[in-house]
Amino acid sequence: MAYPIAPGGLAAILAHPDDESFGCAGALAVAHDAGATTRLLVVTRGEAGSADGSSDPATGDQREAELICAARAIGLDEVSLLDGYPDGGVADQPFERLVDEITAWMAERRPAAVITFGPHGVTGHPDHIAVGNATRWAVERLADRGIAPNAVYVISPIFDPSGNRYDLSGEEQAATHRIPITKVAARKAEALGCHASQTDASEELAALKAAIESGEPIHEGYSRVRPLVPSPHPEFDTALL
Ligand SMILES: [Zn+2]
Image (cartoon, rainbow, N blue to C red):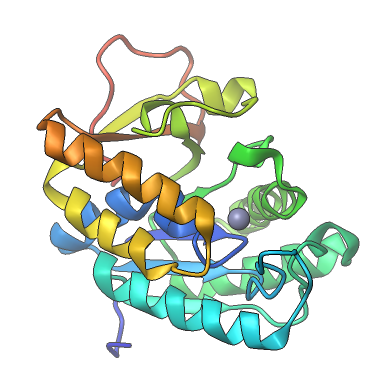
């Protein structure tokens, strides 16, 4: 995409093509519109995302194209994919290697703030949980070198128009930041629409479209996990950067 890309900004580190559109497309679009560099690191190509869950390289190609479509809708400056992590099998790969690769990716780009998955990975998907854990270890590696991001957030889907359908961890349940995304909601919808191979994306899209048509404010939720917020504030913060 566009080069050269300024360091800093907001980065999301996630597991599959489409996680960004479900999870944090709104906050990334808001950051992009405010002039921040926005980046996404996706650990797998989503090749097991077919209707029957079988793994197929052609599905991976399709989902990579869907990811690029979503990145354009959101306004991402850079999208990176790791090699060697099978969709559905991230937790079976050497954890240390994943931490090393995420550390290196962040060390080159020095994001000011990072979004990843919390302890239940929103949906409980083992890939989400592994990527969230590895990202948080990677942040500690950076902290040892004095170059940690200023803030790390986990996705807290409690404000999603589709409702809170998952068994969330305490961290994910306790949003510290509620980000207004009404102005960019149409772009989040466009991004979800890019993931045409995924039926759950179309369900999420329908819920988001209904929320847009209702005229009610639309939000995304995040829980800041580093530095810790001592207790939830009655007035949510409204910016990640
Ligand atoms: Zn996912």
